[in-house]
Amino acid sequence: MTSKTLLRILAMATVVVMVGATVAEARRSGSSGSRGSRTNAPPPVTSTAPTTAAPMQRTTTPAPAPGMQQPGMAPRPGMTPPAAQGSRWGGLGMGLAAGFLGAGLFGLLSGQGFLSGLGSLMGMLGFLFQFALIAGIIYLVVRLVRGRREQDAGGQPAMARMGNAPAGPMGGGNAMPGGAPMGANPIPGMAGGSVAAAQRAPSDTIGVTPQDYDQFERLLANVCEAYSREDLNGLRAMATPEMVGYFADDLKDAAGRGLVNRLSNVKLLQGDLSEAWREQDSDYATVAMRFAIIDVMIDRASGRVVEGNPQGEEAVELWTFRRPHGATWQLSAIQKT
Image (cartoon, rainbow, N blue to C red; front, top):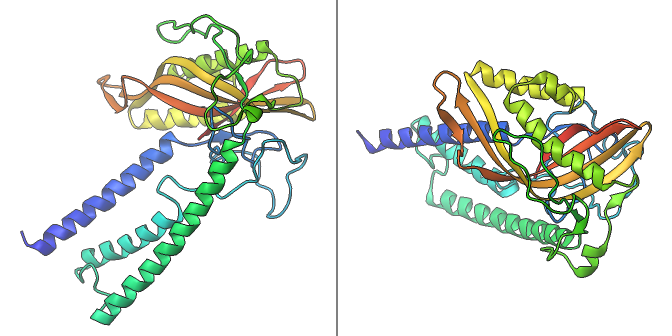
């Protein structure tokens, strides 16, 4: 096997791995649903979720026209202006690097060499100079954006701790250890914020109660349980029709590949309120939750785990709940961080 053939094989393998990783990431990190008039605005960060939530990838709420404020929207305390969302591949810098890599891989695959377009020593020097210049600009931009995000996250309010009310039945019937209900106590030793920030209250114009926090925690467990059972009727009682539609699509996609997504051992570890508000005839509450979960994809025929960690993992998500006045809460959106 010649060196050129080996390089072509390695290049093709790299492309396959990158594409496969991208597909898996998209499947496991989507944000879906609606948050009323605030769907296209990121919820305020909290102690539990100190980074900006991912924008909605699936939603029935149309995006506002560029430069137009969403209906009913007003600046909210603790809310940072919406910013461009960086990708998990590293944003602008990795995008440019991927462009250079793609050009090199194309040269290898076409048999013209990795740097066939440079042509000469002067071309090589010119390329290196341009690359160094672009890299320097990217470094400055990344430092500026990172510093601004850290400054924004450091001054956000810490919300009330979502405590340890009993969770709904999950698989083996786990229950949260006894303690105060969610929202009853402030989070001690908040990381990344000052004492003054920890004493500020979240944006709550409807008055979320400890009983509401109990419902949020039960919905976290019960929605995961119903989804794992592929119980769409059960999900209809706990989620909006839009979210049930997304759940049905995901379950159908997994079934088409001969897989089933099993969720078990869900245990809330920490949570706090991001914001709660009222619009027209509905109340909304967005809650940041950090929880332990076993989330695996299982082959239907053999029962073998083909993806995920059977030992469990931790997840941080923002769940938005909606209720018509006088009715019970339903899940209306899930956002990843």
